[in-house]
Amino acid sequence: MKLLYFAWVRQKVGTPEEDVTLPGDVRDIGALIGWLKTRGEGYDAAFADLKVIRAAIDQEHVPLDAPLGRALEVAFFPPVTGG
Image (tube, rainbow, N blue to C red; front, side):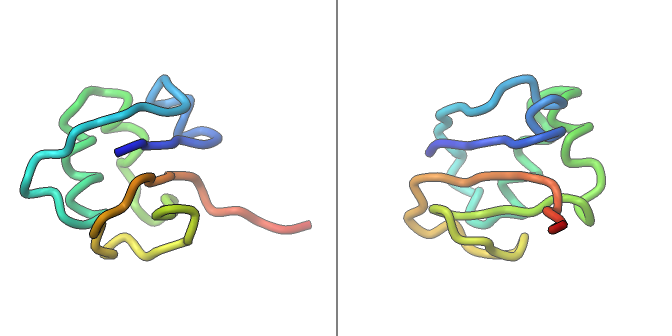
């Protein structure tokens, strides 16, 4: 699965994207975030406050409890404001 990180999420994680093989028990966005937080300080910092994290599965915005299903790509980003 390809993971994409945008804005300050990318800065804290330290990479714009990566390809990962998920553990079998990671079946939704919340579990994916939990697993990512175990991968190091940058990940833990990026996902410390879930109120300021948004996610998209295959380029569709989803809630953090959305199932991954057969997702090819998951993106994480801060809330976007218009102007």
